[in-house]
Image (cartoon, rainbow, N blue to C red; front, side):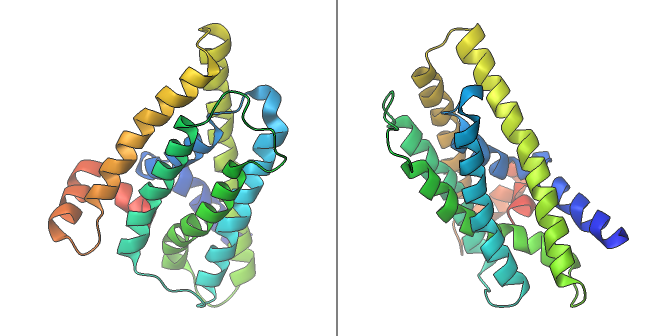
Length: 212
């Protein structure tokens, strides 16, 4: 039970932290187009992301995947940027298909984020109790992620319903702001570039650790 608590708290702390701002902004970009009434779509979206990151997290923990951390750091902001670009070019009432493109974004990019989660998980992991630890860590991530999603939906409701900003304007403007940050992070994290890596440590204030 003590191990479960440790890994659960590790999963929660990995998300609900300013050091995890890159992951928080990715989840934000995924959910910006949705309102409270779209909760079923949000559930599918989060489930797709969960499936993706659970696969690569488990494979990394089992020693089946091993990627250069510098490339994972670089790819994380690119997943944010791609999601934002998709949001910006989203047209009103465009999502008529049962499986919009954003769901596949969530699944595929979840695979990349799972490799990022693996870094912190493996920092504590031993050979015993692997399945239980993976479960506890994943549950912690999902609980924290749910808190982030609720916050995003609440913010969108305030902006669209109370402030009366058109939903498409809110989606595009917020996505553009996040896009700028993600491209800056991507530039700072270009692999094999010692100068930009050092800048990342100074400017991001720990976000690199969150991406490991």
